[in-house]
Every structure is written in C-alpha cells, then in structure tokens.
Length: 278
Image (tube, rainbow, N blue to C red; front, side):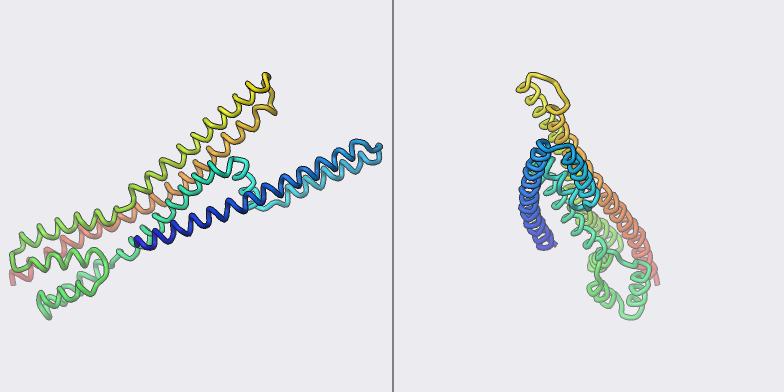
C-alpha cells in the first residue's frame, strides 16, 4: 500500500506539472488572442459607420465563443486567473488527499469479511479437526477478523481468559491499522480551505495595493484582486468538500468493520467455551 501511495503521489505531481505547462500555454494563447482582438478593435474604431456594424458582429462572435467553451476550458481559465502558482498548492493538496483516500478504500474493502460465513467454517473446522484445523483455516483466510481469531487460537493452551486478553489486545492493533491515514486526510480537509482563505487575504492585499498606487477607488482597480481572492476561496472549499465526503465514507466503513469484529469475537469466544465444556 505504501508503494501505491508513492506511485499515486508521483503521478499526481507529474500531472500537476503537465497541467501547469498546459495552463501556461493557454495563458499565452489567451494573451495572443487578446492582442489580436485589440488590434481589430483599434482598426475598427477608425472606420466609418459601416465598419461599426462589423464591430457588432465581432462582439457577437466573442459571445458565441464564450458560450461554446467546455467546463474543462472554463475550469482551466479560472485556475489561471486565480494564480497558477498558488492554486497549484491547493491542487496538490487534493491530489495527495485523494491518493490516501484511494489507498484506504482499497485496504478497507480487502479487509471486509463475511463474518457469519467465517464463524460457520470455524465451528466446522473446530469440530472436525480441532484447534490445529481451525488455525489453518484462519491462516488461509484474508482479513483482520481471521487474524484476530488466529491470535486467539494460538493462546488456546493457556485458557479461555488468556484467549480473551489476546483477542482484545490484538483487536486494538487491528483497529489502529484500519484508522491509519485518516488523520492525514482530515489534515488536508482542514488545510485546503485555509489555503483558500490565505489566497483571499493575499488578493485583498493586492487590491488595496492597486488602490494605493492609483490613488483612486474604482471597480476596475479593485476587481482584479477581489477576483483572485474569491477564486482561491472557491477552489479551497471545493477541495475540502470533496475530501470531507470521502473521509465520512471511510469513517463509516471503519466503524462498520469494528462492529463486525466485536460481534464476531464475542461469538468466537462463545464457540470456544462450548467446545471446552463438551
């Protein structure tokens, strides 16, 4: 699983670098398009009333192009406008958080066991082949429940009380493994909106710097900084919301596995007590 996390993180970093390159290219193309549009507007401004009708058609063409933009193109454009360098940190937070989420989902799904079926097989193995057959069954069964049962069966010679202590102690270890990585996901959930709010503060500072330099408060002077502030906040909140949804799913999955382990261990001890009393 650690190799999977490293691979996903590396893939995310490479993807992030590719995105930055694509965004830079898009920014250059946007600047070229803007320069060409300005030249067309300057030329059109010097023409007669007939050319004014051509300007109107150009505006209509621009509006049509904006309407034809896909969601992906709009997202890239807003990403660049928010500042590719700062927004890249938020994107990296999302990539790392999703890498941990994917690793945890795979691990927890592999840890899921049909405890009723396992207990039935365990009871049959115990009746037919004794403790050794039951231990072989647990050794060949995947999942934390089987490993807990194996740990308890390995202490069978020391009595039921020792088995209960072994099951309880090893169960705590298994719970810690199930919850591993969740604290890092919760950290990314907290960091992403904070980075967005930091971008808000930086954008507002830039807006006030522009006001100070211009010596006048006007919408055109303030709009740029406020736009950056709002975009970074939106992206930070989106990342936090996405990771929060996955985090709640993982927590509920862990709780479900823990409940199954507790119920199955109680049944496991009851089966051993019945077997011992026969």
